[in-house]
Structures are given as C-alpha cells and as structure tokens.
Image (cartoon, rainbow, N blue to C red; front, side, top):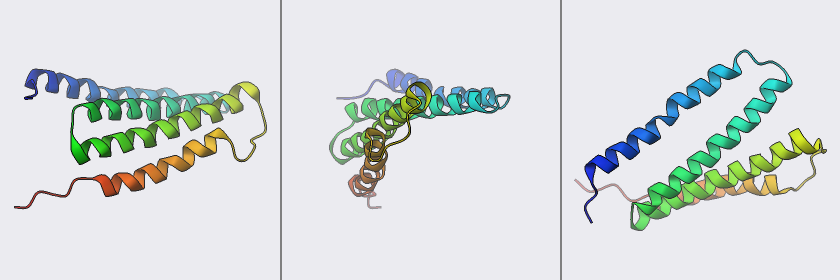
Length: 129
C-alpha cells in the first residue's frame, strides 16, 4: 500500500521535534547541582529510552520483513533499558533501598546489548548496485 507522503513527512517532523526537547532537557540540567541533577538525569534518561522504544514500535508497524524485525529489536532494546532504568530510579529516589543484585533493572540492562546484537544481524543487506 503506498504511503501518504504528507503523513510520512509530518511523522518525521514530529519525531525530529524530539531533538530540540532533548537539548532543552540538557540545558535545564546545567544549573542543577547535587541531588537535583541526579533526579533529573535519572528521570530524563528513563524518559528518553522509553520514548525511543515506543518510536521504534511505531516505525516497526510501518515496515515489513527484516526491516520490521530490526525496528522491533531496537524497540525491545530501548524499552528494556528504559524499564530497567525506571526500576533503578524508583529504588534510588523513592525506596532509598540499597541496590541488590540481580534486580529487574539488571535484567533490562542486560537485554539491551543482546537485542542490539541481534539487531545488527537482522539489518537488511545493502542493495546491489
């Protein structure tokens, strides 16, 4: 099915608008020191990883075959990191618990490189010229 160019361009513009938000998030971190900066950094890194994972799922819905598998693996990698980081942040900021090993956070952090490695294998081969 042909993709509506207007819809494709507006989706790209929406996803590109995330970049200035990330820059603004970094600029907001500059005046913070100590625990305020740590809280902001933990929440920001969680938000960015989960956003990247959800964006990967949206992209996977619009593609087929190996490209879809690649987007799904990228989404799994980012979501696992984001959810692991969310769990770590909860323990760090709310529960004030000593980190135990292994935790759900460790599972999320370990899944990230494994899914990333599979992603490299799932990438489509370059087209022959």
